[in-house]
Length: 129
Image (cartoon, rainbow, N blue to C red):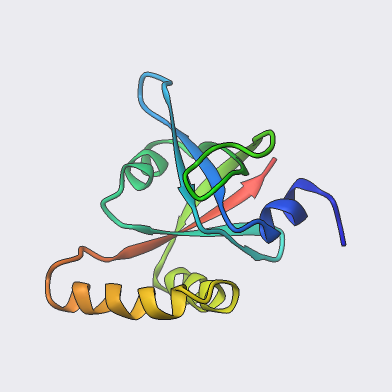
């Protein structure tokens, strides 16, 4: 198995995605991640702070962490890009392959969207620099 940051982060259950406020202050969040070729994909609520910050700047850091966000390795520089509807379908399919709990969670979130209790989701492509 490879040992590049992309390989390591693609295998780890959780990553700590750090985005940046207008002031430059870092904000870190533990998220699920899947690998798609030379990039990593993250799934998020469309109204999450990390999505708002990604709309403003593509700058990010990404590194391995525990479920609660405690770093387990050094972060690396990365860029983020919000993907369209096809990206959401792709990341959800890959999440269901990697995470057993995603097979239950994702359909429930879709129900929440249909009932107006959830605003929807977005896929974030993360490219390591």
